[in-house]
Length: 317
Image (cartoon, rainbow, N blue to C red; front, side, top):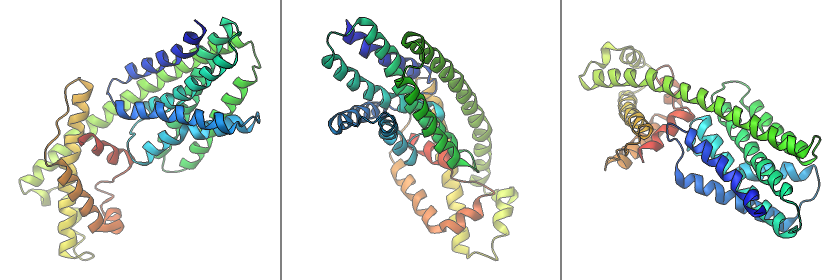
């Protein structure tokens, strides 16, 4: 019975977060890989045996977060929801190994010990890595002081982890507190992120459709985007202007399709994957390389490829 109490709670909590993801932002393959990464990190630390009470939680938090940071770096994470779930999954994998090691090392421990480890320590591991993921993805949307949020993410995770390990309050109360506080935080953040995602879709979707229709009808010059491109003739060659035009048109087409797939996922419909999508993504990449950084900066008043714009294109694959 003790092993069940030490393993099941964190998996139930992870399932709870997965259910909260109404837009189905999380890919099951990445979720599984996050758990596997957490397991691998725990096994690695088990063999090198870091025992310093200060260094251990810091090293654990850094290692647990590596995979979710990798996903963010590769534009596979778009909002705090998927960052939190991937982070929690990595922490859950770590906690599963740690609790199993403790279980076989202390078979005589009371059932209360396993309740505290299963509901408290394991959820704490997942929660700390989720906090890192959420704050790092939030830093992407902040033009200034983004690095401060990243430092704050690791500092917060370390302090929570360190304090939890030292049981400054009754272990049972501490366990109840970590479950209640994390549950409330996740629900509030997920609801906020869901609202933000709805607003993002509503603001961009209709605007992009209108602009693409005007381009397809040959009415680009009557738009502000067309007028702006017209002012660039003195600074760029005709070939560069044409590449910028093609870049805007192709990006709008792919962006609309990506948002369509996102709405299909939200309503449990299968996403649509066109046969030529890889070719179009490759063409967009080639056009982006052709216009270069100067061209991207020049087009910034019209469009920009920030982390979320790049992330949504992954929905097309």
